[in-house]
Length: 196
Image (cartoon, rainbow, N blue to C red; front, side, top):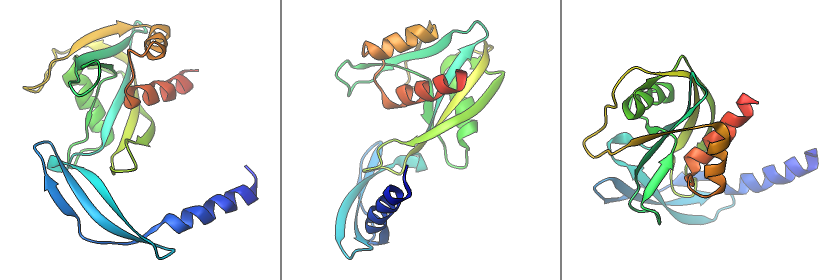
């Protein structure tokens, strides 16, 4: 990209940087809270924004692209009641607990949701879940050489089935709209670049 275009971009970015924020007004929910604050920008304008705040300090998540020793990808299927389909077909994932790294959460969630343990686990990227209303910076991991060592260790409210597929089948599931959550699609795309 040309330096003049970068300079133009940086000038716009500088106008939108936050220089102050009022206290958050919290609206409580069972799973999430909503915070509302006024932000004063460098250009003097003030805007009001709401922010999703997860309970128990959780907000960011780890998403795992698990590949078994037989080159199968481990997908999970679970109820996702607020979606049009009501069911999610996705990569294993879960919130990063307070005082836990993304790596630790990825390893824990892979084991809990699938019973698989990877030979190797590497971070392959990150992305904001919804930068318009959330601080959640999700981390993407590639887990290779996965072996089934354990039974699933699901939370009381979790209902998860496993679905094994090839990489080409995964891409087909995305193209056909069966897999349509951002975390799975972004992580699959990042994993595909690493695996090339």
